[in-house]
Length: 187
Image 1 (cartoon, rainbow, N blue to C red):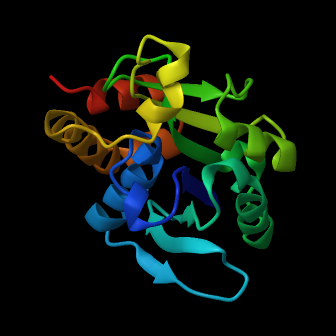
Image 2 (image 1 turned 45 degrees about the vertical axis):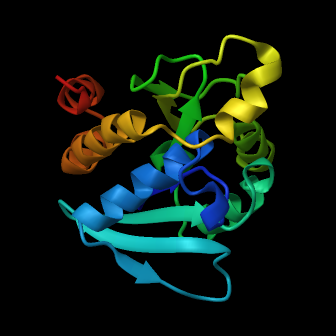
C-alpha cells in the first residue's frame, strides 16, 4: 500500500493559499486518475483510492489544520497499514523558488509546522515532495505569504506542474526519482 498525502488547511477560505499546494497536488492526481472517494467514521479528511500498475494507493487530505495534521495522517497510515517508506507527503516549501519541486527522503521539518506535526506522530523517515513557493524575503512576512492566495500566473504554473505530477505518478511510486523530476519540470 502506498499513501500520497497533501498538506493544507481545510475550508474554502484557504483553497488557493500557497500553504495548500499539497492539497492541490492531491486534487489533480485524483481528478486525472479518477480516484474513488472513500468515506468512513475513522477518516478525518478527504480520502481516495486508486490502483496503479497493481499497487493500491491511498490519497489523503486532512480536515485538521496544518499545525495539527499529524494525528489524522498517522491514523490513516495505521488503518491502511502503510509502511513509512511508502508515505509520500506533498507540501509547500519556502526555500525553493516558485515552481521548483524536489524530493527528499526523511530529514527535518525546516520550520514547516505541518511536517513538525507529522514528525511528532510518526517519525521523520517518510518521503517529502517539496513544492517551491519562494520566500517573501523577510521573516516577518512568512505567515502572511504562505496564507495568501497564489496569483493567477502562479496558479497556471502549478496547474501544469500538478498535471505533470499526476501524469507521471507511477515514476514517483516506483522511486524513479530522476526520471520523475525530469518529466514534471515545466519546459
